[in-house]
Length: 383
Figure (cartoon, rainbow, N blue to C red):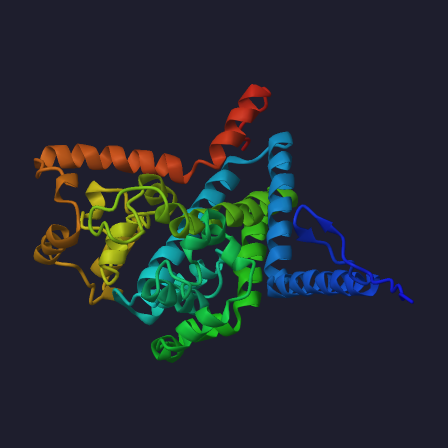
């Protein structure tokens, strides 16, 4: 007697064995994948710096509203002039104070000058002088690497403003902890500005710029607020951010072709002389951030330091020597990039032209408003 047994044999199709997995196993896999997705999303959201993101949304939204307001309402000439002066002064406070003085110690300053620079720097909303110098020193020490808080290798947007919107990685924190910031803590003006940064910004960055035009020459409160506080802050902030972004992507590298920072003329104009970035990363201790004198090359930051040096308020100015610059260019730069020496007359004429162009670019935010008002047949200024 032959017994027949039924055995489940996996079906074979084109040489591949198809196994029928239990339905419960598939459900477990789906649930696990969903948990991983949610966990990753939660992790990414947790890395975002929501306070800065919300602040940037509010600032840029108010800037758009303010631009529409300025086009549709009359603006007094004194308010245009006042906002331009504030923009230039606060930008110089950042470039001269936050950058060249506190971040690089390229010169020394009296207490009076440090106080002036601290007040002007706080108006930019670019962080305190202490926090900026801390991040900037880390940026120079580990430029264009994962230890760089503004790492351009992560993209143009990240190096421009994206790094402001995420928390520092453990790698960046560890790199920064290895640097010495005792000199910044020992400076009472720098440290007090850091401790009271928020109320100082509200006072000098928002209230005073808004109230001066309102009480001094009867400007409307909203026009004064939008132009002198909001739009001025937004424009200056992006001008400063361009040094970390555009000047690491576009331009020439004549002093050291092996590094990423470049010489970018547009950034030079918009950042008041900070766009000589290839030179600056090659000679970071140089107070002028350029080998040329300020009178022959648009560099308001250097000219201001020179002025305070004449007044005795700035001293111990550090400068790369001609011999050091030439030797560096010959070793790791591009000697063919540089023009032969020019006569004094050419340098003077070129300097005048460069300063005119630089001031036009530096004040470009006023031009769209003026053009649109002319097209709409509205008075550009009123008295």
